Structure formats: C-alpha cells, structure tokens
Length: 269
Ligand SMILES: Nc1ncnc2c1ncn2[C@@H]1O[C@H](COP(=O)(O)OP(=O)(O)OP(=O)(O)O)[C@@H](O)[C@H]1O
Ligand SMILES: Cc1ncc(CO)c(N)n1
Image 1 (cartoon, protein in one colour):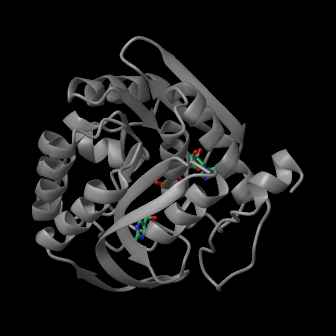
Image 2 (cartoon, helix red, strand yellow):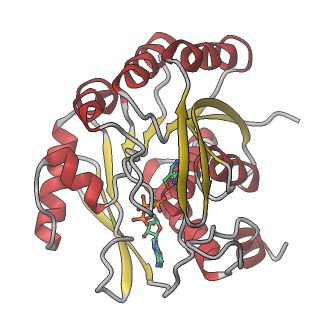
C-alpha cells in the first residue's frame, strides 16, 4: 500500500494534547504516515508547562535529514521552534530539500502563559521561515506580534493577513479561536487575491489544549494528499470542530481534544 508522508517539526507535550503528539494523532486519523523532528521536550499537562528543554539546532537538522534522505515527505509543518538558532537550522534544511508544502504554525505562548518561542526569535521567524511557507496559521495574538498591529475588527484581521502575505507567505489563515465574544469561531484565509471565511459554532469549553497544533497538522495532512489549500483548510476546520465538540475528560485544567471524533462524526467509524 502506498501512503503519503508528512513531517512535523515541533516540541513534545508530555500531556499528549499538543505538539508532536497532537500532530501524529491527526496525521494518523487523516490517513497520512507521520514522521517527526523534535525541537524541544516540554514537561506539560492540562494545567500548564512545568519545564522546557530545547534540543540543539544540529539535532533538529539531523532528524530532518534522516527523514529527508530516506523516507521523503509530501508536506511538513512547524510548531514550537523555541529559539532563533533552531529557526535558522529548520529554514536552511527546508530550502536544501526544496520542500514546498510547508505549513508554519507560529507557536509562541502556551495556554497557561509559558513562552514556547523566545522573543528575540520573532524576527528570524519573519525573515527566514515565513518566506518559505505555503500556509501560516497564527491565532490573533500571534498575528498581532508578527504584524505589530492590534487586531479587533474584521477589517484589521484582513489588514493583518495582507501584511503577512507581504512577508512572502502564499496563504495566510488567521484563526478566530481567541475571539471569545463571538458565537462563532471564524477563521480567515487569504491567498493574496481573495478572502475566504470558515465559520463554526463556538463551543463553550475549557478543553481546547492543542487546537492550533491539530488544526495546522490537519492542513498539512491534506496538503500531503494533494488537496488544494482552501479544501485542506476546510477539512481541518471540520476536524477541529469535531475534536472539540466530542469532549474527553482528561486532567483538571485545559484538557485535550478528541482525535477519534472526526471519523466518528463523518465516516461512522
Ligand atoms: N471554542 C471553540 N469552538 C470552536 N472552534 C474553536 C474553539 N476554539 C478554537 N477553535 C478553532 O480551533 C482552531 C485553532 O484556533 P485557536 O485560535 O484556538 O488556535 P491556537 O490558539 O493556536 O490554539 P492552541 O491552544 O493550540 O495554542 C481554529 O480553527 C479555531 O476556529
Ligand atoms: C509542545 C507544544 N507545542 C505547542 C503548544 C501550543 O498549544 C504547546 N502547548 N506545547
């Protein structure tokens, strides 16, 4: 059986809800073979991040080479990158392998407030990695940091998307999970020409740990299968909606989402 392959370059979440763990679960559920390059180990649970240990940039690069030289991938995503040196190593290696279907989830801060990206690494993210991205998926606070704008209105969201497009990203998705005073969770896609909105009912829950990782991993899995960007975003939206709706009760803080839900909802599995 031939299968499409995807790579996630991200941190480990010991609690299993976000990071590499969320990405692999998503790849698996969407029928794509998942490979990994770990950037950092976090000691983390539903209450927050207790400890962080970054790997060396060389070790991140070696893992990418191990995957690239033998297995090969049709698409990849980046998540927690932690520092500027890791961002440089990742960007150089992506360029060397000429990987094109690159999804950048510009992870900055965990739900509990812990920093997953050093402040001084933001400029490396903008200048080195974003120009290589086919899709970038910031939440609203991340889009504010990347653009230096305050984003409150729909027009400001559009302006931020235009700014990010100008940095060389082919498709910008500004996620609306943080827009808590709306009854819908609205994600905005911009491809340099048109805006497409993806809407879903906002679910009232504190169990949204790892939603961003899962969403970007689902886009990556669909791109690996050859799906076009708007359709990939649409499937990712359905996937994350199902995964938030069909709640699990794990831990006493911000619990993870449910990766069994998508197939249960849409494929009766
Ligand atoms: N309460 C909710 N109800 C429905 N959809 C949601 C909810 N919260 C987030 N989403 C959806 O989940 C996806 C991730 O968005 P979000 O803005 O939460 O990302 P994030 O902040 O990067 O996540 P993370 O918690 O992993 O950092 C988006 O498609 C968003 O619309
Ligand atoms: C390892 C890791 N990556 C990403 C996030 C963002 O949800 C997190 N909390 N932990």
